[in-house]
Length: 210
Image 1 (cartoon, rainbow, N blue to C red):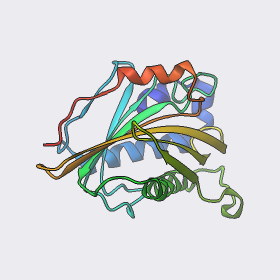
Image 2 (image 1 turned 180 degrees about the vertical axis):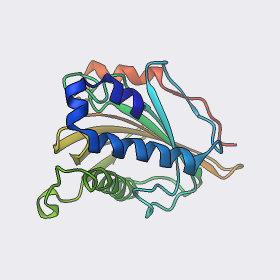
Image 3 (image 1 turned 90 degrees about the vertical axis):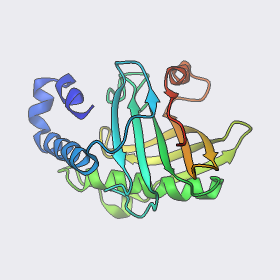
């Protein structure tokens, strides 16, 4: 996904962001070497959705004490700030059972996740942001009949170098016999009534808790 993102950028932007490009490539190589071929994908998505698989513990958020991996699918316009698909993506955690998610546990875990992710990108960039101004992400969730919905205010170290609010839908399932757990996240800055949420119907969890 990272390499395709780089190829999609204009030549001028690429030259101006060589340091960021190098960081992304190094992160991609690190993920590949650390993960190897240990995990198969558990998601099905259209061919034009880019993908990554990252093992736990996450390099950018080792405090999240899960065992398993994260399977990610990025909408085609994920990296394009002019697209309705900007920052629209899905990921599923396939992990050893930790028990049912709650509003508080989701908020705590996603705060750690995005704080670590954005700092990892920001810390390798020339566009550093004063920690005193950036603050930690703010993540709030409420329980629904289908799982959870939430909002996350995070600092976008990847693209805009500014705060962004991401809307989230969460579903979970626990397989008691195999002691596994699936937690799936649909994410977009678009409101829940926007047509972009229909894109997630094409991203399906095909893996089983085995």
